[in-house]
Amino acid sequence: MQDDDKRLAATTAAAEIQPGMLVGLGTGSTAAFLIDHLARRIRDGLSVTAVATSDATERAARAAGIIVLPFDDIDRIDLAIDGVDEIDGSCRAIKGAGGAMLREKIVAASAGRMIAICDGSKSVASLGAVPVPVEVLPLARTFVADLLCRIGATPTLRQASGVGAYRTDQDNLVIDCKFPDLPDPAAIAAQLSAIPGILGHGLFLEEIDTAYIAHDGLVRRVDR
Ligand code: 5RP
Image 1 (cartoon, rainbow, N blue to C red):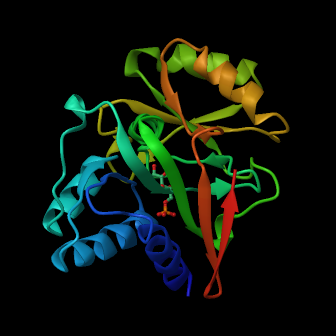
Image 2 (image 1 turned 90 degrees about the vertical axis):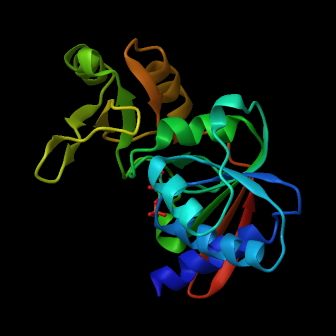
Image 3 (image 1 turned 60 degrees about the vertical axis):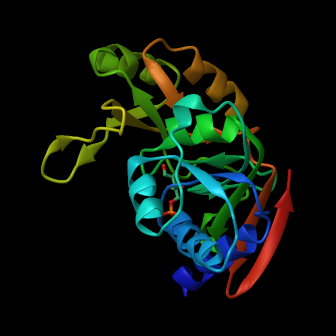
């Protein structure tokens, strides 16, 4: 049921992909439905190219037959479509359970438009039930964790099952920051951005233009 809703949100968003677009492909299980659907449309003749927000997405998209361009040479894309871990009624979101928030943020910032896709379980009245992940330069991990405590977070170094600390595609660490509550996400975002050693965080407060949220087979559109 949840997967049906993820697929529905993804295919609804995919209807906004026009011929010739350069599309940013998100990361995670909802984005995987987007990749499947887009690959089918490409097989049916749609001409689009893509950039990927993670190595896993790049592999999946290429395997499905989507042309994925390296982001290194690209300054602007047409449309980014990506999942979220939480989203509120103003299209403000927390992302990064999959550890890809740094590249996801860069791709989102380069996009003329960003669409979030999710099932109804991700829709919240206010952000903060899930931790805010931050990508951290490994040598700064203790310094950063101390500063995170000082701004009110309970920091946890993310682990990968059985192999120690989780590493991002950029070979950095992730610290998950649980805040007791998040009444002013913009203030926390500014504080996180100001900590040297934090390379990016999972608060997406300005990037998302539209969200498609599917619940029990019905899609709700939310615009910022
Ligand atoms: C990865 C992300 C994902 O988009 C987010 O975790 C949602 O994933 P899923 O669609 O599997 O619930 O931010 O860094």
